[in-house]
Length: 262
Image (cartoon, rainbow, N blue to C red; front, top):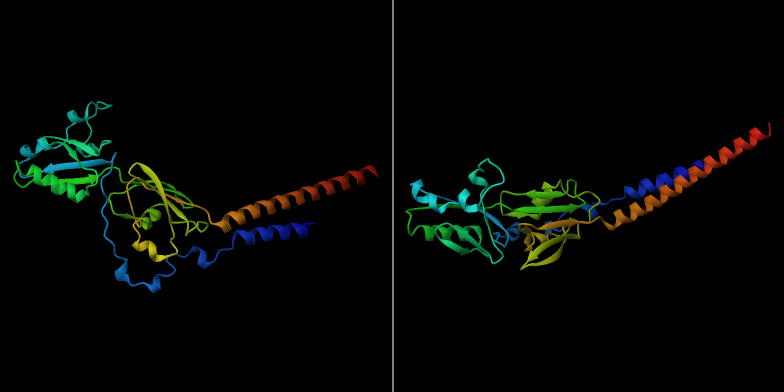
């Protein structure tokens, strides 16, 4: 009986540890590509519900001050402490617009950060000499879930974030991850869409999904072997436990019978 238990435990351990290089390596065909083909330009575009930090500066701060968002323009705060200027931001409304001091309503949806900088510099430059405009995303967040070491929602300073950088921030894929079945969830024109990503193939380096967008969600499912081994291991452990229970019961019964015959 004990020998049977040992065999069951050994089989469970073997199932849990069966992983090959073919199952875990990224970009398995990378040697067949030329590095020059892997470069792809990307700029994030502004979407509805984005939050933008915009700062206008120049030689004369008193002239550029009216073009900067003030506390009074965003309404009362929830505390008596005055928030830092860096926390103030413009919310892109449901029509893709922001309300900008002096200039009024501006349609920003679909613009890149640089395009908005150029537009504001041109418009403000009609009244201010050599204005300096700074624009950044305040909500560039990406969520990583599933078979990674540290799932969670991460904020990035740059709007050029690759899928590799996002997975790296989450501690990389676990050995049990399905590398050819990563799911990217992305909202496009108000509709949630999903795309499947295969990290075993270097095609992803030239894919429109290599660089992520604000509020993207990456879900990394477990590999089929991981699911099968977990199920098999559970069954084997259950069988082993049952065998141990049976052994204990038989031994206990034998002791009782022995005591009764004394």
